[in-house]
Image 1 (cartoon, rainbow, N blue to C red):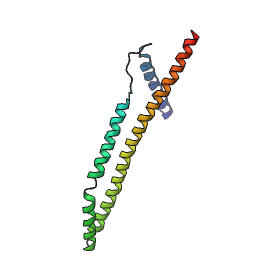
Image 2: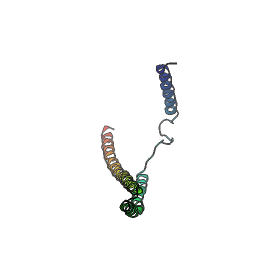
Image 3: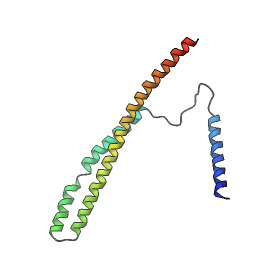
Image 4: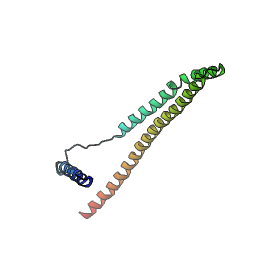
Length: 140
């Protein structure tokens, strides 16, 4: 079977599965459950967890840095080859720690932004729906 034939079969099967799922939802009024639901509280908790992780990581991830640096310098001064290797470990650890701290900060900030943006969107949508309902009253 060629790639194009296999791809066409897979697309057709996926379309059929998708149509079956859509057709199985209850008509008017729902009663079904959504596949994906995100509440502002969920975003807040995840953002808090990311912030807490960042806070702990910035404190606990830095315990070994001063001692490792001092040991690397002492080994270098004593003309041990392992001094330069330990200094590389120290530098690499600092780079990775900064990367992790930045990632946790970005996650926390993004979720805070998303939570605020969803609240603004909800207000806007609610305002738009109110305008539509006022129009509907005049059309009766």
